[in-house]
Length: 153
Ligand code: THU
Image (cartoon, rainbow, N blue to C red; front, side, top):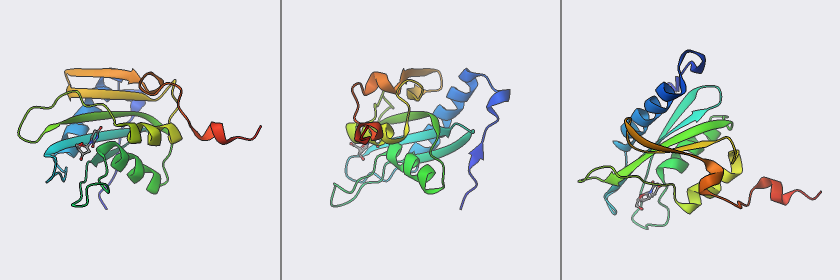
């Protein structure tokens, strides 16, 4: 397995970290398997302790098994024992065209709702490292349904 990159967040300012994540999301996008939509997406997920998990979208001839870039990154992290997340950067666009602001789909937002704090977790939607928007997760998924809703007390 490839080594997971770790950044020392104490030594970097927030902007440097955000720009690095956008670059890593663009790299991840290169791996997208998108023969059906030709819409390639890349994501880079930062854990609270500085690890970066990259993910791309992976399509399927039966269409519905398709996995989005964000979920690929999140599931990679979970499967390696990481589940405390700080932020995610996302880039997407047609393979033959330019990247455009691509927001996480509703399924990915629901997966984020399982693991991410709506007030703290950040979603960076980027064109490139000089053009990106940053949202608190709760902004893009208000009134979410999450694990706390299943508490009995
Ligand atoms: N897709 C993602 O990977 N992430 C998003 O945020 C939006 C959509 C993928 C799914 C599918 O492979 C392609 O983009 C077109 O919907």
